[in-house]
Image 1 (tube, rainbow, N blue to C red):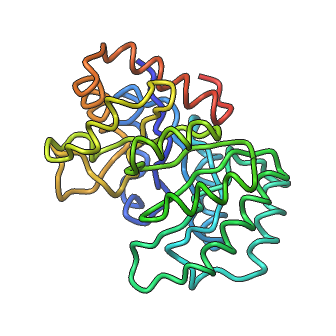
Image 2 (cartoon, rainbow, N blue to C red):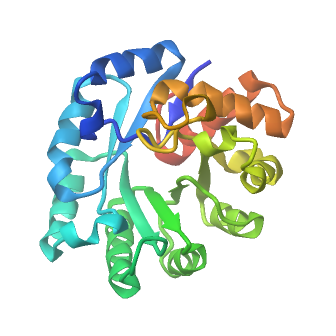
Length: 255
């Protein structure tokens, strides 16, 4: 099986001590492609260098809503310049996060709108981070049609999921799917069209059930696949093939 981890922060410092071993373990587990999203401008150079050094790692560049205090107006121009110079796979991780304490919703919306415009002008898909804000994100996406992308770690409603799909987005499912207590999420993964689903780990966060409380890793992506197969009652190999094809179609990957 060939799997695509559509969201994995391998550039984070928590992987500094054993990053090469983690990548090797993921490859041996069948994870042949890994998308590494950016969260702030300061980390982009390290992220780009990491992806250039390892086959199968693909960069995305963006300004994450959870790090709003780190972002400056000039970073938007820097994003445009970087997209033109390096042509990453996508723009991300971008979005809205109303779950954090005292979110500045207006500032987050302005940042997201600006990055959606940049992505559309560059002809690139986007990787969305959305918490407690799906209706607002969908409203912005309807106003500015772009090249689609992925709503990562999706946990909205079935209706919202279908709206994302209609707008050209796939929905990312990962470690939380492996927990039996995640009844709403598992029901959602069972009911959505398979064409709408891609797999992810969001490592180092959102660890699978078998590694609860530990650092998450892309090598655990097959456990997310197994959970998806369980809730949908479908063959894992078929799901691997289909979710990989979904990721390839959305992100322009050669798989």
